Amino acid sequence: MSETVFKALENYGLDIQNCRGQGYDNGANMKGKHSGLQKRIIEQNKRAFFVPCGCHSLNLVVSDAAKSSVPTVTLFGTIQRLYTLFSSSTKRWSLFLESLSRSEESCTGPPLTLKELCITRWEARIDSLKAVRYQIVEVRQALWDLYDDPSFEDDVRSEANSLATTLEDYGFLVSLITWYDVLFQINLASKMLQ
View (cartoon, helix red, strand yellow):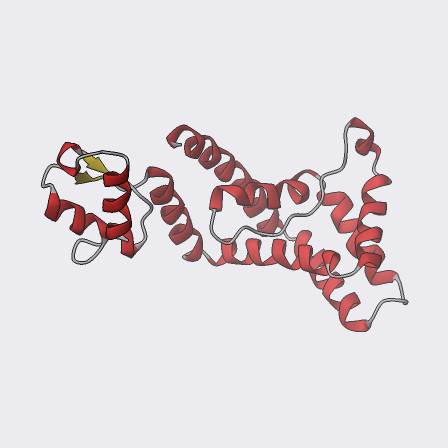
């Protein structure tokens, strides 16, 4: 990695001695003090201080905080289960979209569809929460419609029942609204850091 950086600097006619800072993601191969790119550049120029990327640091803080909270793990697990249940079958996805189109509020704009959770970027998870946050009644109804339809397999109907019951839970609703608001603010901060 360091050879690539030094070669690129040389190709652009840039002297490493004029470098006054380094900043990259928080990967060990980049920021490592003992064998990362940071160390190799510091060996060439002691004035090239390393500053960790603010966006990546924010993402790591949110990720660690979320992993330490059982309700949060449950929330995001439920959101992913919802997406998986509906998106893994065109018939189920059609049922979901039909439920959204029956909504009185859908005439104010296009319905929001479920999104898969982004594994690496926490601020992007707001898109996954948004459809459920603002259309929870319709999502819940789609689950009950799925549960009530005998043409679906028993395991699919059971999963729909489980998810619909979870969406009715007060703790889940509080987590959903809280995390949506938190991720909204994190998204703003992340954009400012970029």
